[in-house]
Image 1 (cartoon, rainbow, N blue to C red):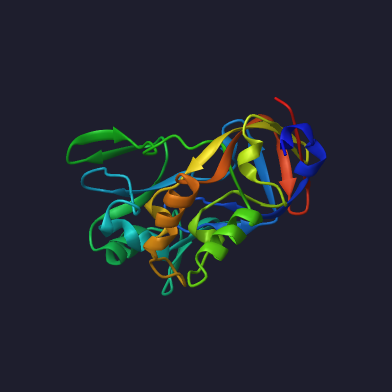
Image 2: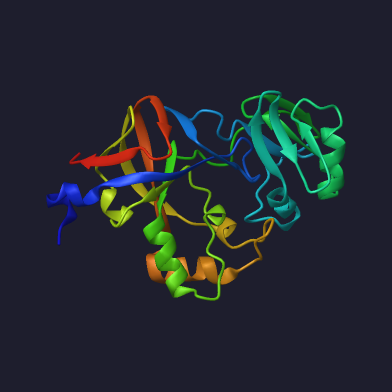
Length: 247
């Protein structure tokens, strides 16, 4: 059946919302998100960086950065709070760089994306390693299907770092090319989400599991979830209805 000819069957609701204040660190589950044309407000505003080389953290590729997924980042009234199992400090805390050096075993820090940093190769502008799509959506249906394929695995939403978890019976791959409405926001689902090693590496309360990525590659052509651009800005909340129209 062609779902494009039956838009009512694409009905969906927002089951959960996530924000990641620091790229590569664990994020926070929230009740609302403010969406803008360049993405989620407060999402990935900061980067974890090597103070000597200027290298941006890449835990999915480089083993020394993997402790990043043992750290949580969340927005508080005092600013972005970074916490491990042993400590909690805000971005502006003078002791944070030292705590991070102890965590990783080398000099590193959290700095705002777009800021400048003086390194051993000179002054550099800190930019994300890749330009993320504004919004990342993932359905409970996809999570359930992956769990059925991997009954021994812990298929946890935190492995996939979505912004919006969607409760729907539809396949989100069929949303690509459609206009999407969520609360007061409007946008377009642009492409399927290609997955990387971040899905399988260990993090707090989740063990390393290469079968997660291997199965997504073999059974879903490496795609899991979808990206969307935002055309009309606004705030979305858990429980909001999501609807789709032809592009």
